Length: 410
Image (tube, rainbow, N blue to C red; front, side):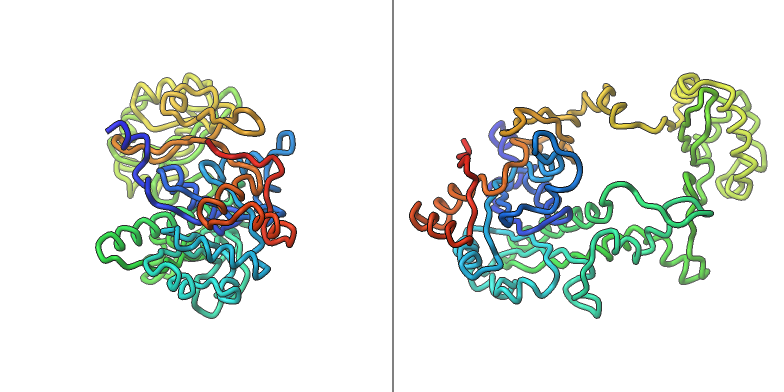
């Protein structure tokens, strides 16, 4: 059992990542966290994600986390020699994850049909802006573009202002989750049938799937939904409230039983049986009036007092955490959500923990993201059978790139 826990549930599966930026690398990172051997292919210039976010001593902190647990090789897929090296590797892999624009891999002779010739049962997970088919399939698309088209962006922000956005590539992460799920479903099918398949994940459709409640609503009522700021529509009370010390607390007491507990914590238990507020439908109809009553209570007490009263009454509520709050919070520490991780360049770096938690086969973080081409020599020697002389010739031609420090993994 100990070995099973240490190896991870995906131990024995090998994944080739051709992705860039966020969605593809995030999908492969999830698989790597749970034991899959993931080898990431980058151009010599590196994944675009290495230029996003903060750096320390020239090290991309974004890449340190999203490229964790992966070996990194550098191939130039724009030249025939680089693509030929990739073809030599394909038979050694169970899964290929890619997020090029549809048609690019076909142009290079690396489509799903091409790869099936080299590995008949291969699973190919493809992430793109609009999917592999349809009138928009050939258009360039980032996650935020799919988010805007999906209707999801229309719902983010305040109603009297233009749509806002979350300051992370939200849709890329949603698509990456769907891609990881699709990959696992395809591998499960392969275990049963012996057949691989192509998994087609669209950034647009991934974001759109989160709009599911509005689809039948529009069909039957023609209501499109609208931004509502910190509120969640039709779930009163469920929004931010100010406190006396200039802070805010989010209270989510939309269930009838929880609302009655909130009324008791406020010292106004009669609100729980008041016809205006005693049911969810009534609270939604009288949302502004109800929020004014709650606001009058929270604004006369400091945040800590409000939080303590709501905790005692078992009402879901919290201040808005910053990353500084998270690093100081005992629950994040107790749940191993801040993991000190070895890093070849920085010595050590804290990364977000593995989700989900599994009792028998948990995931692990073994190392932080490595340098461009750090594992090129080791991988091409062991998996493609290339000699040092062959690799030197390929490096001179620009088909591959090797890290000058030539780090060999333990």
